[in-house]
Image (cartoon, rainbow, N blue to C red; front, side, top):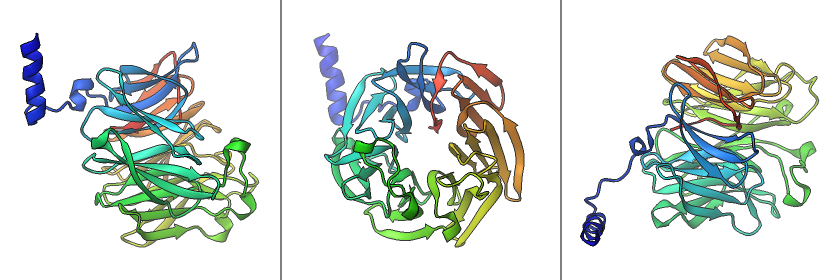
Length: 351
C-alpha cells in the first residue's frame, strides 16, 4: 500500500497523473440547488434528460453555482445576502474550500470562472459604501482571495464571461441593500441599473444605462450568446400597472439595444427569474415564477408561451431548453416532464 501511495504521490508531483474531468463525476450537463422534503439542501448534477447524476449536501439554501470549465468542481453560493460559498468536489461530494466574503461584504449568489479556470470572479456588496465589487479568487491556491475591483455600479447580481475570454459582463441591479435591514431595498426612488463590460483587471470598457422610463427596472440575470450578444432579464421595482418590457438584448459589437415587449411587467407580474440564450437557434428563453410562464423568443419576437407553475430554472439543452420548478418538475426537450421529491431553486447552470 505504501509503495502504491508513493507511486501516486510521485505522479501528482511530476504532473503525470491524469487530471479529473467532469466525466469522472458522471458527465452531468447541469447543476441546480434544491430543497428536499426534510428541508435539507443539496446541489444536484443533472443529465441532459433531466435525470439526477449526483446529489451533494449543502449547509443552507443555495442560489446559483459556478461550474469549473474543466475540473469536476463547483462553487455553490449561499442565497443573498450570504457571506460564504463552498467549493465542492463533484466526484466525492467533499468540500474542497470555503470562500468567506471580506468584512463588510456579502455575496450576491453568482460567480464565473476565467476561461482557463485559474480565477473565480464573484459579485459582492460593499454595503457600508453602497458599492458593487467583483472579488477575485485564485483557484490554483485553494481559492485564495487575491484582489477586487468595482463592478461599475450598485448591486451587482449576475456575472458572465464574454466569448473573447477577456471581458466580463456584469448586471448591476442598482438596488442598495444592507444586512441590518435584510432584503429591504433602500434607494428605490434613485436606483439606476446598468450593464457593465469590464476587462479582467477591472477596467470599464463599456456601460449601458437604460432610458429614464426604465429607472426602476433592475437588471438581474444574464445569458450570453457565442456571438457576444447579451440577453438580460429584469425585475420591476415600481407599480405593476406600468407595462414595460422585462427582457432586453444588447450587442456591444453592433452598439444595439433591443427590448421584447411580450415579456411585460403586467404579464410577468414584474419578475423574470432566469434566462438562457441558445446560440445555435438564436432563441432566448425566460421564466417567471410569479406568473408561472416560460417564454421563448426569436429575433422577431415571441415564439412560444407556456404555463408552468413555479417555474424558474432554465438552460440550453440541444436545440431547445430545459426548465425546472419549485414543485420538483424537470421539463427536458427529449423526455418531457419528470417529477422529483425536491423543490428546485432559482437557477439551472449549464456545465
